[in-house]
Image (cartoon, rainbow, N blue to C red; front, top):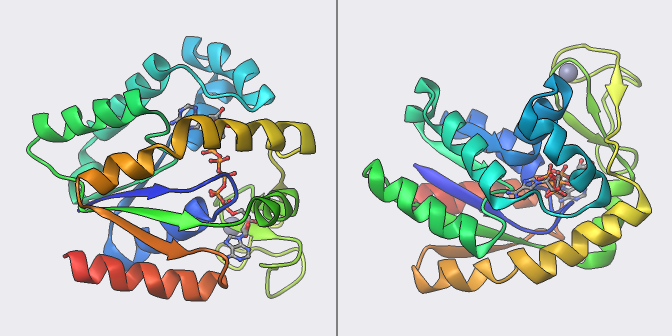
Length: 217
Ligand code: AP5
Ligand code: ZN
């Protein structure tokens, strides 16, 4: 199984990818997470990506495709993968099609999470994650059951992303409309495109996604 989650920043790609991982035994491949890890590790790619990400622009296709290809070659990905935040440009989509063909795989479904621009700004500005396990939370929409304690691992350290500020969010949204939205057409032409109303609650979106994946299996 190879799923692509399409959608603007804040649509819920990361939130839902983690649920799909558990429900279907898949591996989440988030290029955003891979790039943040490269920045933290201070690799060449990370140094090149850091400023670009801080501006809310897209990191160059070469860097992103190389990082993704390396991760995809690791053994655990044989279980099946969820591409979260990749591809984001036509060049990346073409590279993914090639990678799939090389390894004899196919995209099972490319699922477009549809949200209003206004909701996305609200979601991103309230977002934080568990420092220990990465579970995502929101000041209003998803709070831990016990205040200050991660539901998933019991951790008590939380963090917010450096690029979740108003100026960067506006630029990330522009980049989405200019470069990523056209991929809806790319996957439509391959007849693997599905759409989910991601303005619904997290649980409803999850149920819709599970139904789509079950139907595609
Ligand atoms: P990346 O890390 O991919 O960020 P993004 O696309 O901006 O997406 P987000 O992680 O912000 O949002 P999400 O859709 O995962 O939403 P989430 O589930 O957290 O990319 C960051 C940067 O890296 C880019 O700007 C770029 O520079 C670079 N980059 C990454 N990939 C690249 C690529 N392929 N090519 C080039 N550059 C790349 O949800 C958001 C919040 O809302 C959470 O708090 C959550 O709890 C809440 N929430 C979720 N669903 C709902 C719901 N249904 N109702 C209410 N609240 C909800
Ligand atoms: Zn945790």
